[in-house]
Image (cartoon, rainbow, N blue to C red; front, side):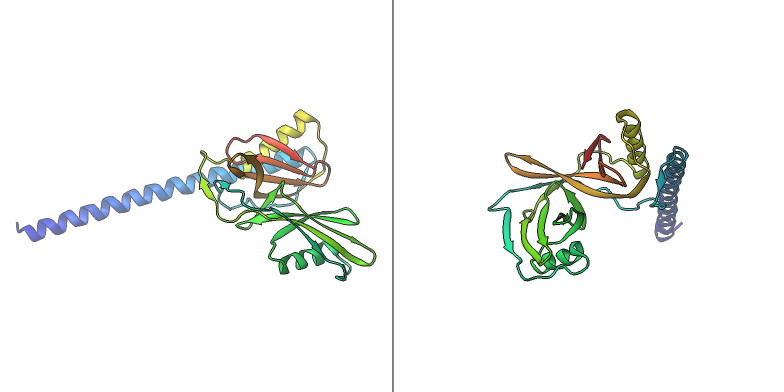
Length: 231
């Protein structure tokens, strides 16, 4: 048999082996997703059986980010005079548009009727614990106390991330153990909490569970599953 034919046979065998391995990886991925989806459905059903209305029906598909370390450089706070800018019928949204013009990207957390609190976004994810505040009265906006996150950052993977279903389960365990009361889960999404240190700031990835009561936000650590509350 010629060497060229032997070589072609070897190449064919290698292609078959690679296709087989790829199919095995694909099968395992599909099985893992199916198990995760079934766990999600069971967890949501259990939540509703306990009288907790779950509004975000679909399982979040976003991938868990890593932990980010930011070097704190210069002033992080900026006070801006907004006198003369009208609030319109929705001060929270009008304030968000003003902040956008100032280069700030965030999400409105709460409007206490004179002060709107915003959380910044980091790569599109909400960061609780580093709030910006806009004040206003019946005449319009007054001031903006803006806290900006440093640019750049070093990202590390601290371990194996937990799924959205696991985060929801940990949240319900906390409700039972700590005696918190709510009737709805308004949203479930990825985000960060802020921690401080000698080297600057640390953005810790979490699953946020937003409820219709106080505490409104529960942060489930994206890697350890520990739960903390945010007012």
